[in-house]
Image (cartoon, rainbow, N blue to C red):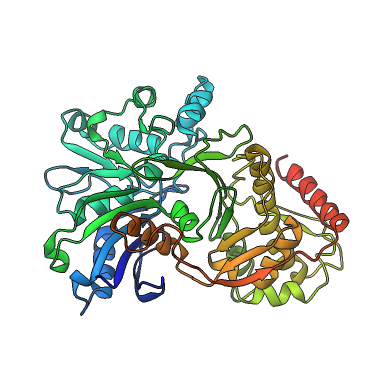
Length: 487
C-alpha cells in the first residue's frame, strides 16, 4: 500500500510540489519562483517552458530517494485562466502564456458588451464579460501570432490553461485534457451541460480543434511518462487553485473559504445547485466527479495583500508586511480614516474598472498607524462586500468563514474580519491548503483517502467581539467611501 500522494501546485509566482502522507501532513515541499514578464503596462506574461521546467524540477526534488511505487497518485492544481497555445507536433508554445491578470483584451470585451452579449456569457458560462478569462486571450493569440489562426483551423495547435499544459508535458504529449473547474474559467464552457459551448465558440471564433477534452475533476487523466520519475504514476485530479483550496478546507455545502493573497478569492460552496448571480459574482464549477458536479459562487477582490505591499514599496511607511499588525494595534481605531484600495479598479461585487484608490477622513491627527490600520480593515470590508451578496443570492446564512493565504497569518486582520462579519473566522493549521485540496481530490480516484476521512485541525479561531451597532456604523462609513471612489 502506497504511503504518499503527490500534489503539483503551479501558481502565479511559483511552482511547487508537495508530498503528503496518510495523515495529510506535508512531508516534503519544493518551490521555485516564476519570472513575471510585463511587455507593456497592463500586460502580464509567463514563459510556458519555464512553467513546465520549474514544475518538473520541484517534482523531481520532492521525489528524490522516494520509490515511485510508494506514491498512490498525482493531483495537479494551477493558476486559472492563464492561456497557452502550442504546437501539437513539437510541443512548443507559439507565444508566452497570457496570465490571468493581463488586461490586453479589455477593449474586445467592451466591444462584446456593447453588442449585448453580457447576458449570454453569464447564462452559459456563469462568468462576467471580462478580460480576466481565457476566451478573449485565446482570440488574441490566434489573431496576433502570425499564421496561428490558419494552423489552428488545420488542427495543428492545442490550447490549454496551465493544467492542460502540464498534463500534456507530463504524459509526453499523450493527453490533451482539462477538468470542469478549469474549463469553467475559459468563457467557452457551458457550466450546465458540462460541454464546450457552441454559441460561445462561435461568438469568439475559436476553432473547436484547439480545445482540450473536458473531464470531471476526479478522473484517471493519464499517466506520467516513466522517463520523469521511473514509473507511470496516475494523474487522477486536475483542479483550479481556488477550487482546490475549497476542497482543502473540506468545505461542505453552505460553507465558504477566503484565500488572502495579492488579491482575495472567496468561494461559497452551493452543492449541486447552480446559482447564477445577478450582482456581479461568478458561478463556477467547484469540482466534478463521474456522477455528480458541485458548484460555487465566487467573488474576487483584486487588491488586498497588494495594498499592504503598496504601503511598503509605494509609500515606504512599513519595512515589511509583518509590521502592519503591530502598527494597526498601536491605535484604538482608524480615527475616521478609510482607504479604498482600488489600485486596479474594483472586483466583485462591483466590477468597476474605472474606480480608483481613495483615502478619506484624514485629519491633522492622522498618522501612518491610522493608514496601516485602515488598509487592513479595507481587506475585511471588501470580504464582507462579497460575502453579503453571496449569502443573499444563495439563500444561506453562513456560520463560519474558513481562511488561508499569506494575510490570514495577520491576527489583527483576522479578528477584525470576524468582527465586521459577525461570525467566527477559522484559520487552518495546514499551510498548504491548496495543494492538500488537489491531493484530496486525487485520492478519491485511487482510494488513498476516502471522502470525509481526512480530519483537519484548526490553527486558530477568531470570534466576533464587536457590538452590532458599532459594526454597522463602521461598515456604512466604508460603503460611503466606496461610493466616492467610484466617482
